[in-house]
Image (cartoon, rainbow, N blue to C red; front, side, top):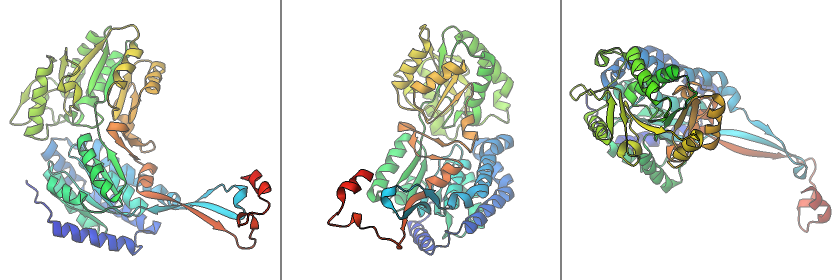
Length: 463
């Protein structure tokens, strides 16, 4: 299946219609927002099988993985917002200092307005629809731009959205980077982008023309640290799961390994066993093991194999885009596999043998760009020390990936891995403006603030 670019004239018409619809005030009532969230929830239920079938076609995702990593996350987000949107939308009281008497202070939540959501191909459902939940909850309109690299999923999403919402409220536009360029040349009140750091810079540059705020959910090289105090068998299994989920094509996948020299051989042995336990002896036949998204990405991954010594895996099939879980050792630290986000099942190994392991790990991690995730396996005390002395979008101690599963904690990047957060209340706040409101009584009008500032010495004492 190949998607056709949405014509620029139609995109312009949708933008104008959404501007007019937002200005009408139709989206402001929390009851309306709840109704729209309920429609989306019903649509997710009705379209789940078609969504999962499309994910199978485009990414070879099994039904179970599609539910676990895509639809269930969106459904949980909808439930969270349905439960809390009315409370989140209420004005909040704020303390008012004596110098402002007889005023009262409030914080009012208002929707930012007309928004653009651009999603990538690796998790094409949750990374498009989770931000949409925040847009609906806060009272915004939204134009959704899915990835052309997963055309079956993108088409199903378009059909689902058009069956649920009016185009003047939520609409899907399709196409390649030409469509992205045209969208980014238009004026929005917020742009929510998930993708690579390089494209994030393009989005931010385009948004600067109108001083449009942006939320950038990017990526980077997320380190996975295995200390000598780690439960090696458990660590290997959890790391193998996190690395092979969606065939490694996950923005928060562990990107490279930092192994303590004392446990290196044991970890490699347990990692191989864990891969076989998760995916069987014949990984290519495993229904739960995904495929590389396209030939270009496949060729990029093949190029990484020459950056070191392949000590496990390396099997691949170009026609089906199968790429086996792979370990690479003796990797130069300035090689592409150690400087570019891998986005695949290849795992380069960095070995640290110094007695001051934590210090060396911190030095190594902080010498590079801030990653979207950081994973540490070892004692909780040492893990907290690593977290304290480093920076990343999110982190796990003795686990991988799972910080994305809790809607009650923020998800987002920092530095090169992004800016802004979402999930749960963070999503509502991301699409909202916190507006200050001061209400001053007229039953008294104190003269101290007026020129010529009589009794200023007394007033100065309470300022």
